[in-house]
Length: 227
Ligand SMILES: *Cc1c(COP(=O)(O)O)cnc(C)c1O
Image (cartoon, rainbow, N blue to C red):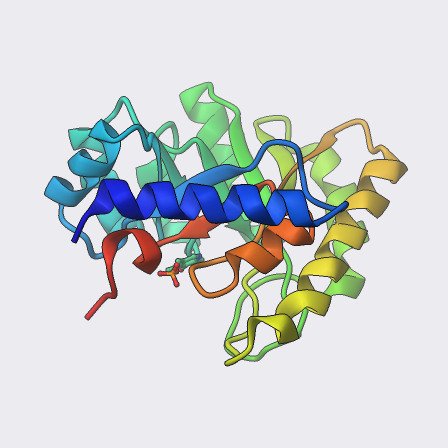
């Protein structure tokens, strides 16, 4: 397993996808999804110049962040309200804000810690039962409500594409999230900043970049498959 070579290959694929599409963002941030992977592999990636990592469980993010606080840690998985207290001040970005109850808790804990927590709103475009995230018709009202949360800053949107064999099938899902992102940017709510569009994983990140993602979350293509 050559992590540095994998990182170069993913970066190259991102670059090629950017060149192919008029919708592509000028700058795309690569998150290396290190869930279940040991610190040794993360240190190797860090030494190779990869400084942003994604984890989907609070219990795993917290100790890894403590070992490598100079890296930027992103929480990308579903967040339970009772876990919020452990991660305030430890994440660069929470990608999975999807309920008012969770926003309430993030606000309360962030105010207490005197920090502003950066979040993306997760949208369940395909309305899959198994996935968390707001449904599309709920998004606008949810964003309106975020005006009352001074210690929680909305910085964009995130989605997880449905699992399909051909990544082309996901393209309409990513295109729809981009459309929502642009719609909300246009609406220009003063308390919202539509800056980050987080979509794309190992099997579909080139399509996500073509459709405008400016954060992609790539795990197995960098660190190998998970058991
Ligand atoms: C695990 C995970 C990823 C990365 O998945 P890979 O297929 O290994 O690239 C991306 N996003 C989320 C939310 C994940 O849970």
